[in-house]
Amino acid sequence: MNKILALLISFVLISNSGFSQERELFRGGMFLHTGYQKNNLNFPKVDGLIYGIGGKISFRFGEHLRIGTEGYVSTFNYKSNEGNYKIGWGGLLAEYQFTNKKLNPVAGISFGAGKVHDLFVLSGDFEDNIVDQTIYKVYPTFILSPHFSLEYTVTESINLVLKADYQFYPGIQFPDYISKGARFYFGVLFMR
Image 1 (cartoon, helix red, strand yellow):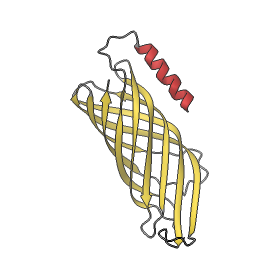
Image 2 (cartoon, helix red, strand yellow):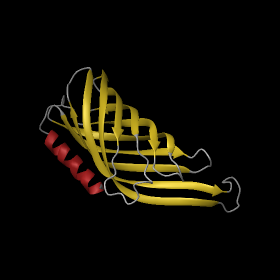
Image 3 (cartoon, helix red, strand yellow):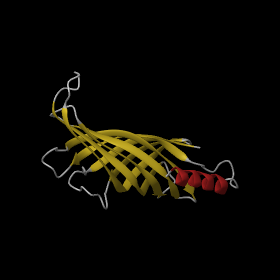
Image 4 (cartoon, one colour):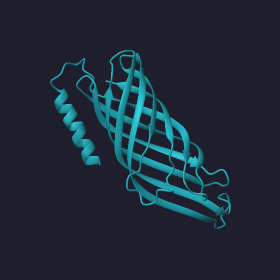
């Protein structure tokens, strides 16, 4: 993945070197997100609000197309104990910006890989030094994530962003374990 990212950045810098200084080289920033997630299990049950953080960087090709990368982490805390369900993912990103006005709709898709860390405490207390009984599962997954966002131009170099996505997990070995649902993001993009 690092080689692909380095190749992408090199290609963008070389292809943009012939343009004027007014051309946008890249846009990137951080996002907070939340959403309602649910899995198909009765135990351990993911059913409630998740939250997380992450970011993205993209490079413009022409007036409307952007290509880049993004990565995020989402966490759900089990209500009955001190455990949590956490999924981290990252991958390549392609977006299409429909207009170049003050408010810009953007549609895109990202594809990559992720890993679920699921810690559920059966008995015990993490605050003492006595052995606890837990279930801890880790499993990887391929992720396909279509999204839609609205970008509001604050200045020439700053955009505020509202975004929504829904993830698909093609080929996952444990489909009932994975939580599903929409995520809603708020973030700031900086352009140069």
